[in-house]
Structure formats: structure tokens, C-alpha cells
Image (cartoon, rainbow, N blue to C red; front, side, top):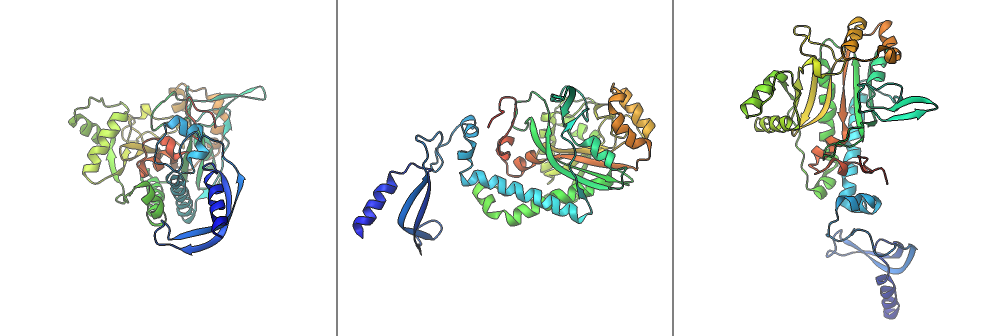
Length: 386
């Protein structure tokens, strides 16, 4: 028996790491091993041998650069802490769906190939569509608004979106997962906040309860933000930034540095997550409704988390004539949007909604150094495979 065990050990020791094996034997308790159990093998069969040398370590603590890891992503995902990220991500999506389902939302799926972009501009990926010009979807914005005229009064979608932005940052990718919602029959922008607030809060609670093992692996401990989230007006935000030494004019967008500074200021007050409201109308898309009391500003918001934008949204312009005027002011070719405008010609209720970056949320929730860590197979300017 001892010789048989020695032969088995010798054969097993020559198997290349990461090979797929079938081991048979007796399972028995052992307090000295990590999970408290060990297998006394009586046979080991190699089902699929791994090539040697491995392009990156899996079991060892030795690290590898990001390009090597993503070039060999399937090996990289064999590390428990890598897989833990996607268990957490799955919990987030499940919680969002569960919460909105309980609020009478319907999950929908809109086209990812379209004849016009939601916001226009140079951030569209153009492709040939049987001899016609088509674009990969930036956002389901136009379609979810169209649905507001159908009687499907509350909809959401979790799906890919694409931005042809030449960004090389730790928080941007070209293909991302967008969590969008739209709500009809609202009276004010504030009516939208409660749904997004509830979905995000539910997601964080679910992760804290059902993702404890994964959070421990990742050494992460996300806190539940105070509910309701703080509301910070754009003009108040400018005063905070100026007080912190940042030069910013009324009417300017708030850049990445500004977001970080605001995040630090809000964190001191105990607000890791907050709504930034009332942006200038000139820097918002055509479908955002202008403030009735001061048309220079708009019924719009960003949801900020730990100094980064998670979502953008607001109340939409549902009145046909005003919408048409906004499009012309933005220099858009109205004819290209006839399919969209048709929904407004025959009655459109007041509505509003949001677009939320799911990948970035997971990144910030777990304090990951790069958004690519939260995506199985990330796409950016340089990476198209695997």
C-alpha cells in the first residue's frame, strides 16, 4: 500500500499546475488544512494537461501586469479574489432587478444598433448596416422615452452601451453595462430620485448580507449610505469648489478634479453618495427639461459616489414644440430623429429617468483600482480581444 501511495505521489507531483484532474479517494477531517477537510487520494487522472510554462501565476502570490492578466483572462479568473468580484456584481444586478420588480417596473431590451445616437456627436461607433449607416447604441435613452407614451409607465434595462471616446483612464471603457430606468407621470424630478435611490441602497444591502465571504476575500467593507441621499445644488457645488481653491465659472461642467474635491467635501459630512442637481441647460442633452423658473438651468442630476459620477438623469422635455426647439438649438438634424419625435406627436406624459454605470459602481463599491477589474473581458482603445 505504501509503494502504491508513493507511486501515486510521484505521478501527481509531475502534473503541470492548473491541469484539469479527477482525483478519487476518501474525504476525512483535518484541522490543519484551510477548509478543515482533506482528500486521501487513491487515484489521480489527468483529464486535460496544462501547457508549461504558465503565462501568469495562479496559485502563487506573485503578481502580473494588467496586460498579461487580461491577455490570459481565463487563467486570471481562476484566482478566488478575481471571481469574487463577479459574484458581487451578480448580487448587485439581482438586487436591482428585485427592487424595481417590486416597484412595478418592467424590464425591457432596446436595440443596440440604431440609425441615430441619443446624444449625437463624435462618440458614436459607426458601422455598415446592409449599405446604410448605423451606430452602436450610446444609450437606450430615445427608446425608453418612446416607451413612456405606450402605457408601459415604468421600465428599466441592464444592457451594454458603447462610447467611442479616446479615454485612457481607470474609470472609462468603450463598452460598458448601463443600468437605465424611466418613469412616466412624474410631477417633478424628485419623483425619480426615490427609485434610483432605492435600487442602489438595496444593492449595497444585498452585497453586505449575501456577499460576506467575497468581501472578506477582497478586503472590502462597503458602507450603506445615508438614505435619503443628500441633494446638492449645482450652484452650491460651485461655491464649495471655489472655497477649495478651484477656479470654475457658473455654466461650466464639473470636471473630474471637481468631482473628487466635492466627494471629499461631502465625505467629511458623512455623505459618500449624493445627488448633484440643477446643471446648466446648455451643457445637458436636448431631451433634458429646462427649469421653469430659470431656463438657464435644467431639471437634471448626477448621482455621485466616492467622488465619481455613477448616474446622470433628470426630468425629460415631454412637450413636442419645446423638444423640437431644443433639438434645433443643439444643431441636430431633426429629420434623423423623426422616429423618436413621432412618439411625442400623439401624446407623451411627463417623465424622467436615469442612466447608471454598473461597472463603475462595482469598481467604487469594492474600491477596485481600475474599472476593467469589474468587467470580465474589458474593451478599451487598445483591447479588442480576448
